[in-house]
Image (cartoon, rainbow, N blue to C red; front, top):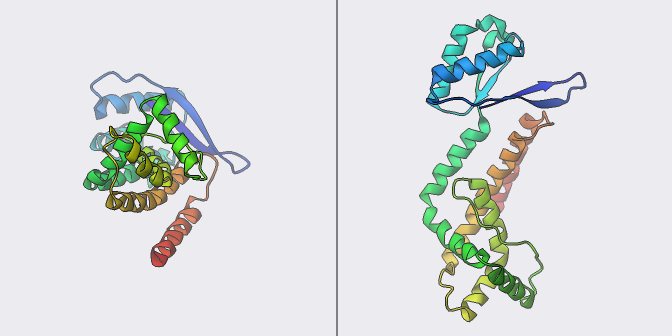
Length: 233
């Protein structure tokens, strides 16, 4: 378990420090995790300086918060613990996107299979880039295969693969073994998915920023820009 502290220094710059990286023995239940975390807070003498504790959105963490509040009085916290338990926005966003992608997994698979085929060996990668050059496609990004458990990697895979749609179409004519060419419908779905994921990807990067304190201002702006794009589509 990693315990990370975020705080604002004297120059109003958001700082981030890894306080402790702890091995937590199984079972990873609320009782065990809460004891380890409280011990860490006490060791660093910050149990009376906390404002919030940000955690992944799961029932174990909910139970852990209750146990921590039994050990440390809420009066010790900033604002009497009013905002003590904060659910990680990036984790919630991750759950939302994964749930959505599971519904349209078939549309993703064809593009994934194609990218996987042309990134399996250096020889295929070389052939792919050679064909790109023959078609005078003005991009030099390499294909990237995604990790199925990381939706942001799926966005990056689509973002590059869409640029080379014509290359895939050309290669299917000269490589009989290549049998996973996405259909026009698959490509349209890929573009739509990529467009939607781009918003979530941008918001996740804002959530993960280590030196900015303008999320409340920037996220509404991103959402407004996306609404404009939808209206113009």
